[in-house]
Amino acid sequence: MHHVIIGAGPAGVVAAEHIRRLDADAKISIIGDEPEPPYSRMAIPYFLIKQIDEKGTHLRKGADHFAGLGIDLVQDRVATVDAAGKQLSLAGGGSVAFDRLLIATGSSPATPPVPGVESQGVYNCWTLEDARNIVSLCQPGNRVVLMGAGFIGCIILEALASSGVDLTVVEMENRMVPRMMNEASGGLIKAWCEHKGVRVHTSTKVEAIEASGGALNVVLSNAETAGADMVISATGVRSNIGFLEGSGIDTDHGILVDTHLETSQPGIYAAGDVCQGKDFSTGEYSVQAIQPTAADHGRIAASNMAGMSQVHQGSVNMNVLDTMGLISSSFGMWMGVDGGESTELNDPGGFKYLNLQFADDLLVGASSLGLTDNVGVLRGLIQSRTRLGEWKDRLIQDPTRIMEAYLARTQAVGFNAYVV
Image 1: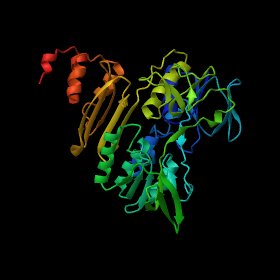
Image 2: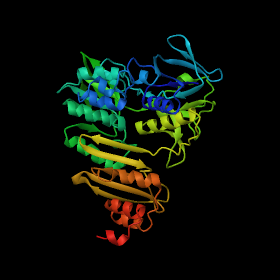
Image 3: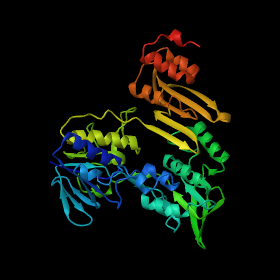
Image 4: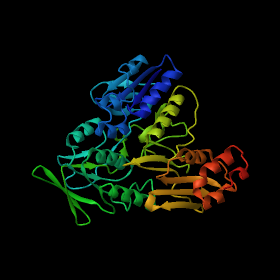
């Protein structure tokens, strides 16, 4: 049995290792299209600020790790997939036959339609090669404009600010991390960054990037301009599904899968940023481009490829972000549900925020800022669908009592022991 995995990111690596644990004799191949050992994109910001070297970004540190497991690493790009014939054609020539296939090709940066975005000195921050280019210009005092203050943008922001560059951030939405935090908490992140010396423009678009004399001039929609030695684009990503045209594999925003992560073609599975998998909270199918989901997908797809029958219950939407020392997080339906109730604690002066969202007596979503003690409890209550009973009303009165509620409801401890 030949298991072929397209994609050398976390989903592909976890899947390959899991298949090996389940089947000692299977042939396993990972095909990756970058000239690097498998690495984590989430580690790139730490490389930018020199906390780690390039080897520190590698998903597995041992040089012989994959060879020791009998996993073949192929550095090439898959050009086409013949699902019926169970063949892959490679851009470098030749083909690869498979018995089971996992597509874990991840995503790529979405290039914004901005005049001048192809100018020298404008980079994505997505690959190790991107990071090498950025490091050369990421020097104290250099002017950097960061386009996009979403989750990926804010991870990059943390690294850039730590390097001592003169940083300007431009975000088209009215707050930072708009797909993770509401207006109140996203506004607090902006205020925190400005307090730390970062210029932040929200509700603003980059209209053009002009190159002049080796420098860049960034024209903004608010009638301001920003000079830059480097511009970094972090305006979103798209699933890498273009090469599947004509394959017979059904796609939408990503690859459509069933509850076993199997595609419309038998024996072919998908995982990670390219997979349009089930959302735990909504039951709908969407792309969740975060590393924990990728690893979860990889394990489940691998189990099914190896002949087991494991159902994907759905991935919990979760994000945890460190923005210049301010920790923010969101889980599940953090934006609320129709007919639900909510409560919040908002302390702008202390940069603290907590929002809980309920459906009946279930906690279905939460977001927090500057409060880290009970982050795991928030996720646990959402994922376990624990009935809060009378504790829902107590949390609406005081959302900081989340640990008391957790202990009372999950360990059947009497309420009187926790009355303050």
